[in-house]
Length: 478
DNA sequence: CTGGGGAAGGGGCCC
DNA sequence: GGGGCCCCTTCCCCA
Image (cartoon, rainbow, N blue to C red; front, side, top):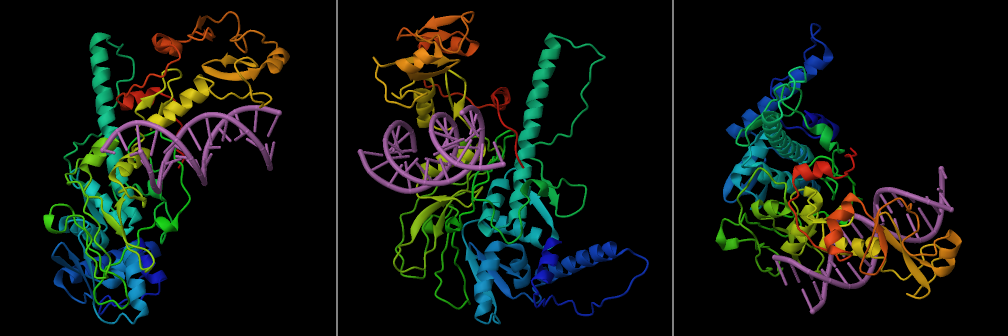
């Protein structure tokens, strides 16, 4: 219903074809009920008109399949169409307009169009990724939010199932007293279950609270820790320059290029944008699409993504169109698939590189290496206290927990730590000598790294939910 | 409360 | 495509 509100707010000309509809004063119902039922009826009317092809003034071509729709409705529900139709409206906009997509399949667009006209989103495990990708492309934040909620719920329930399995196994081994909490059965659904997300008040889950974004604004460009709970949420600054510039239109005035995208299933134009402008065609690069519902690993996600292609359409003659890979979860685009894979980790929360010394985990090997060298190896030849440059002779490495840093001899004397390794940890703490003859306090974490001494051991581990729970993570900051 | 510095995280790009 | 380097931004801690 926001859409209708939006349409009113935009002062749209509103050729809805609702002939005979009149405002009828009704004293028996509350204003909100009237409004709700009116909006519902209006939406039904529009949907009916769309299905009958009545008053449709916009054609959308998706991989050869034609969809009829109303310009006003598309304008009100999609940032993409808003941008597209705004530019068209300036030139008059009386004649029918059209848009062509090959970024997503007709089936996916049909799901989205049904949502636009009915408020019901048919999400399934086998289409959620593609729907989200398409919604991201079309800048429909509501749909993205629903998809995220769907994925999150899938993972929550999977995690709960796993946890329950574990608990059951533990109970079999260590039967709990019957007085304890029995654990209320939770609603569970299979990943193959089809979801219907009601856009509005209803019994279905509403995930809009997870994606509260002002209308008419693109989704935040970064850091949506999608599927996993407990990841830190760091909204990035909006970067309008990273918004994909979509162009595509027939019947629209202007010099915009027509871009076509492929889902990768059709080899003819696989990933290669065909532009009506004289822009060169970048080499095709795309992966095949086969959606999987559980996308908690960057690799998995990456492998299951629909072809993430996009072309940043450039109208500036000085610049050449460049092939970009678009993240399905945000507006970020990258030049290389490998970079996209790396980027996806910031959405999945996957941290495959744990530090052997402190257990902290990192998304990238280089970050782990940098962390280890800085924190645990005290590689910086700088006195931490006075910031002066120190050498092996003029300074010593001291340790504080698993942290190590250097102090110059003067600062060592000031702090009363004239022997390396004795600073800031009590004599009662067990220590061990490393290869450099430095004493380390022995902790559980250090025991893990004892075999390796101070050497960095790169260990790629499974980033399971269990481990995510074990490690210290910061709560999601909505 | 504020500013500075260190650590972490992410992007671009080269090898 | 992976590894790595560089750069920049953000976060966090501390004085």
